[in-house]
Length: 248
Image 1 (spheres, rainbow, N blue to C red):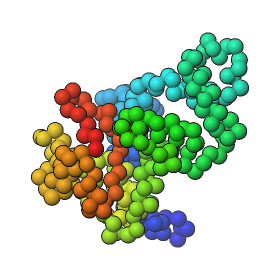
Image 2: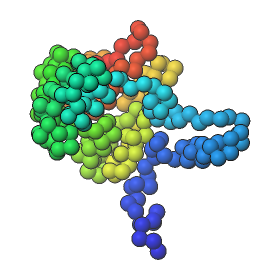
Image 3: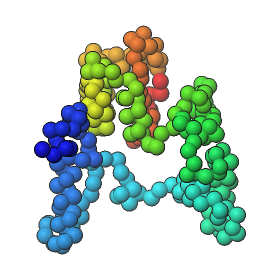
Image 4: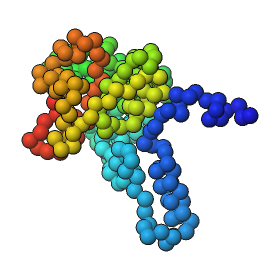
C-alpha cells in the first residue's frame, strides 16, 4: 500500500472543490496540449481559461507603477544609477526609497514582522481612515500575500469543529467552500437572486443580511455574536452606474 494515497491523506482534503483544479480545467489543459502537438486537430485553436479571476493571463496589462516600485525594491542598487531616472518614473523611485527605509536591512529578502512591515501598515491604516472616516490602528492590520492566504488564516482561526457554520453567498468563489471543508467547518449557504440584480432571496438569512445592509450597521451582527468577513477588493466591481457598493 502506498504511503501517500487517496486512502491515507486527510479526508477533509478530499471534500475540497476549487475552481483552479477539477475535471473541466484538467480537460482544458489536455486539449491545450493537443492543440500544441497537433495543430488543427480541433475546430478551435485556442483555450481561454475563464474559470477564475486571472485577467493578466488573458492579456490585461499590469499597473506599471506597482511593477516599477517592486523592481526597484528587489534590486535597490540600481536606484543610484543615472540610467534609472530614464527607465523608471520619479514617483516610483520616490516610493521605492520610502518603502526600503521601512524594511529591516533595506532588503526585501529579510524577514519582516509577522503582521507585515510596520511602515506599510501605518500607510494602510491612514488610507482606510481617509476612505471610511473612522480611525484605523496599524496594530490591528495583518498583511498577507494575497486574499487566499487571508481566507485560510481566518478559517483556521475561527473554525473549531463541524458545529461552526460559515454563512456564504451562493454563487460563490470555491475558495470559501474549499477552505471551510479543509478546516472541518460547515458551509451555511444563502442564495442570491439573479433576477433581482443578484440581491438576496426572501429567506431568513436573506432578510438578516438585508437588514444589515439597509441599516449600514454591524449592530445586528454584533448582537448575534457573528464575525463578519468582507472581501472588499470586489467593491470596485460594480458595473451599473446607478448601483452602489453597500459600505457598512
